[in-house]
Length: 334
Ligand SMILES: [Zn+2]
Image: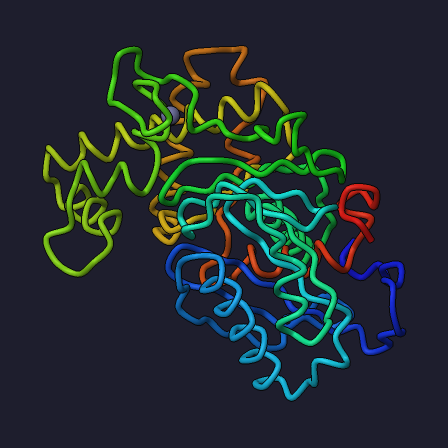
């Protein structure tokens, strides 16, 4: 899948096949430089400055930094793919409601960044849609076989999923596909900024862990919690297990609604690694033991963690531009 040669974009031929992918987050812009075969040559990160002008400038700096590191001039780029946390229209090249970036209106981000980069073609995508394609690419490399039917579950500030179903991104009729963080998990539970109460995101995200178990030092809250639980702290075990049950509820929703071949877990909490995976598998096994129906879905076999340190969002953003077989060409505008 990832080695497929993309149809040439408009403009001069780019025989070298280099592309840059950006994952624009609230605090940093992660950039990768990919070769024609999808190999990551360089990666760089720069701080994100808020507001439209700030985000465009930060993005341009990240592109320039990764090109400089790789010794590749901008003229040899096929283009730049950008994953943004907001409502993205890939065809129009616009983003709106990216509140974490300080962008509220509907803004022509692709044109602005292209102008800032002296005309390099820029393709936008929602960050989770980019990440699910990056996750497919990583699984392809790690497992040695293409996987084009998967969900990417991000356990970060929020909780949401990107869906790549039989090779097609599922964006949704109103771009709400995968917003499972706002399913009601606890009726009349914790208030959510979306206006509802008891949303799953309030129980199964990095922010939920920060609130439930504030880190006593400079370690991330998930690491502090899991360490305390492993040491036998009863309250920590309780908080950890409640979190694991909520993440399992998210996995269950994805499997029972879309039945994807793989569920790939990313976001900051996934950096817990094997100890998180072990807890999730134990809870899935416990539930399967009580339900012959759930047992038939073989959920533990489907879940994977993003390998540590791999910027799947940025990799996927580059692939969004380069691989029209992954995103439908009529939607990605190539
Ligand atoms: Zn909500």
